[in-house]
Amino acid sequence: MGLRQEKLKTIVGKSFKIESQSKPTSNEILGSKYSDIIFQMYKELNGQLDLPPTRFGQWDISTHNFIIELDEERHFNRYRLKTLDSAIYNSWKYFSVADYKSYCSNKEKDCLKAANWAKNWKNLSTEKQFGQSDNEGVLLKKGSSRWRQRAYYDFVKDISSKIIGIPILRISIYDSFKGTSIDKILRTGDLKLMTEIIVKKLRDV
Image (cartoon, rainbow, N blue to C red; front, top):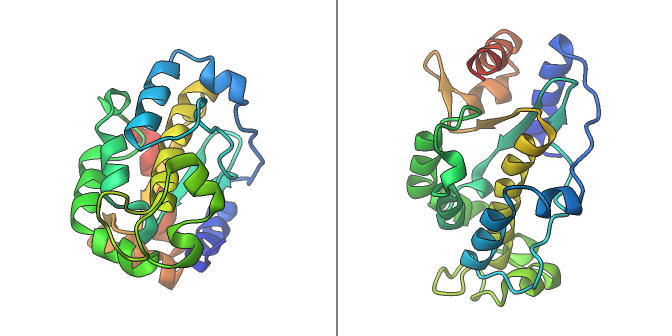
């Protein structure tokens, strides 16, 4: 857990009870009405396995009524942009898809700076799931298998929110509130502003 995520969890915990939320099972995900969409997206991201992987990591922050995912630099790139073109994001309520697409197009250089080496770029698991990668920091046809995996799992997490019936509120470090970036709010630990943001997101769902 990164420093900004730890600060966000502390802030959330002051106003909401932190509570573990289970993830949907593989059968629940691949047996859902979203199955065809998941298979299609996995193949579009150069998926190599017969069955799309579904074992994504733990939620960033969870409460009884909602889950929060904090998206920092590594979440915005060409692969996440591809997932955001999916029809599941039509009329999406949990975050601004238009803003996220903009971040993917305009902030990929930040992603490259933050995740252009070692396991941030590829590992045995990601290459098994998404094929070989280009050399570290090189974004040609193969690109980064780890970036593809992260984008895919963000996509599956979003679909999972529909399956389990609990909203996943995505907060980007590039979002701003009352003229201040989320990144700055988290770095300064502004409890009041961050609580206002979460309440507003819940109201909009």
